Length: 412
Image (cartoon, rainbow, N blue to C red; front, side, top):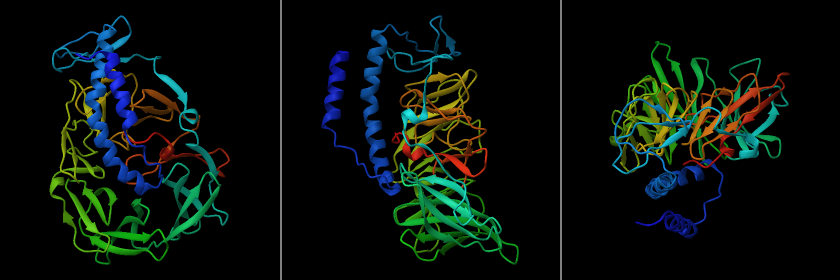
């Protein structure tokens, strides 16, 4: 068997041979990298696990092959029951006071910034999404009329904004917009409305990033759209009752995606077999709707509401939050309640969990990123991708303090 030093050296040499990462910051560029990076990350998990186990054994970590309650050792470590193959070290996590906390600005410079709460013309801003490390998408609303709206992009490096598109808001619309997504070419969103006959309709809208008038490219009579995303030249979404569908941006009929039958879209191309509203049920698989790949989740005993991205999962246990890899390895207990995207969603950007208004816990590094003190941090629900931008209204109300998660770590 290879020694720990040999394994570490082999891993380092493999990393040096790997191609340099694509540094393009646009949303579409990030998304094209995600599938490749997730595949590479999953392929590397086995090597990393061997190194981690070798290190744990060298340090005298205990092993176990059975279940039972979470045990607290005299050393102050939490040992989680496991049914892993014999010889694999039991993953551990630290108790309160041992989590490394670092101000978020030191971890991710530029991720928190202050911007005007209104445009120079008086229209009120609402941050919707982080597009790049310095750009955020805004919804601007004329304060005297909710029917007048537009989308803008604000650049925190220059302190300037530019209009992306006007947002038509017919009076029969019930809520506007419901969800929104964009790439380097298009912006899409949907709205709920009722016809004069009282029929509930969902309209799908699009606008070009290069300009032009927005237009409706599809309408649905089905109610209850869940997550909606852009996927190349199509828009994809899942229904609250399950099932994933697509429609070309050129219009046409909604088509079911075969691999998504009964599933719930989380972050294209990934889907789950559990609805976000089913808080107690554990997710059992992560499905790549583009390739058909299925990863089966190995949940630890005693965990509830387990939710997973392609690599990391989290769920509730009596002593706090259990985090683990999809395959059940790298498990540890964090002694506080942590949440992912929205209620019942996967980790933000694949690896971040929110701890109320205090900060974010990075599953990959084990570091807690402290947020600046504020009365409240607000998550914005109109962005369909897990990992919405957060913002806080300053005391005077004329500025917004914004946390742009696109300036955070690359998604695992």
